[in-house]
Length: 148
Image (cartoon, rainbow, N blue to C red; front, side, top):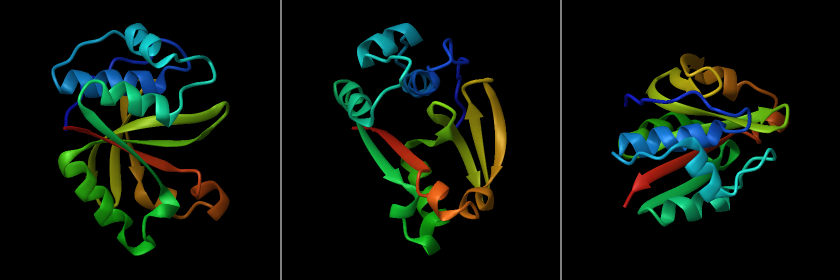
């Protein structure tokens, strides 16, 4: 899917920027500050529960899945199927918690993801994630958003 993502306006707005792009793709326009305020976003970020409540009020489901919760031999198929009827972003450990990327395409073994820090698409090799050390890999997570 093509997204019109606006670069994150504050250094801790990566998820806010992604939510703005997802809502925009669904024809709902909100500023990043409006979304951040509704989420009670702080420099410490936001929780999955805050995102779930915010989206639920707008008629969307939100599901958070850790990398290691998906069967090892089915992760590529799971991701391809998830992208068929969901907006998907993934989060990785970063300096101050996590940083998220919005996935716009998956053609095994490459994910095309938009980095909200730069506003640019990046190609990420699926194996770069799957080959990470087990401890780090277990912290990778996918979030699925779907209009109900």
